[in-house]
Image (cartoon, rainbow, N blue to C red; front, side, top):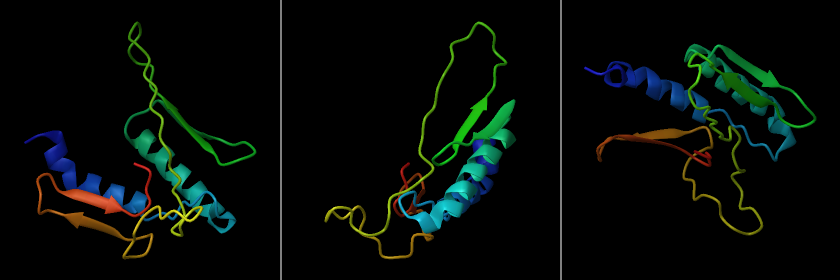
Length: 124
């Protein structure tokens, strides 16, 4: 059995936990949720073995930075992703998503292989 298969349920639960954070960056009342999402990402990167995982605070939302430099002479990779999401309401008259459940809901489908998990308005 592979590492992924052995840990699949834990990975899935972690993803669901992350997707439930209403980190809507355009709504000021969700600023604490943006902070919580950033901390979640930082903590997950640290748990994954990054030698350094930190938040960089500035005028806007925190940036999550992590590094592992344990392969001297090897190429450097940069991964970029958003941990904030779009609001539920249509933006500029355009529907971003057609939700049938609250933002915090996640669903798992096992009808198709592989199983998929969806969180509304997530950016990845």
